[in-house]
Image 1: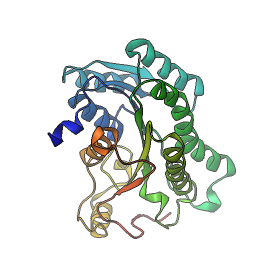
Image 2: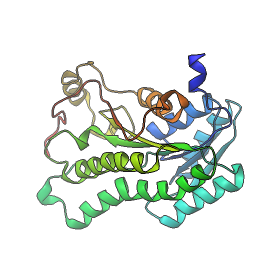
Image 3: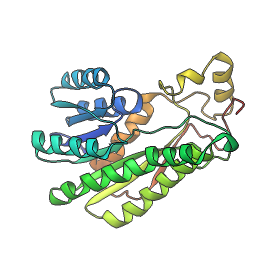
Length: 258
């Protein structure tokens, strides 16, 4: 049956930034489809809650405290995963983010930090995980990029450049690791997460919805379902691609002054 192609029975998935938002939604989607999940993020309480909810689907869940900016902690996530499960089939590089700021107010250090947080950490984690995928049955890497990486708008010199780089890195790695390991990305538009919430009020939300052809902001489950597709055998002929999931947005949509 076609629906069986979405099942992840006994696969093992690592999700960074799994304490909330898209990371949490993705981890729970994997668990619902039968995968064991490793929930990595900085806040212990959050990842323990995600793991607890994942176990309700009858799978195993391992919370591992991790700041992705610390390479030793990335290594620890992979080591604990292999010790617990002996395999890695899926990696979701979700951790990232940088607040919008005018270019002249963005220092070189801030620019470099944005690049490291959004691109270098994903590259580092992928390098740690792919050898284990190659040694096993293969695998799938899903990078959470952003519509900010293609939309031209003030205030996104650091974040937009970083996400653009992550999208192109996805294409390069998808080519290099094929056919055994697939690498894809989602260019995510405005989605109702804890990261966006501080910027939203009724007026700002109305403005965002007005420039979105689908007439609404994204929900976490919208993104999690797309992550599930790219991680599962249902997308077995897709690699090196960046899928836009943004409600049809094609123009500048940030409704705030920078």
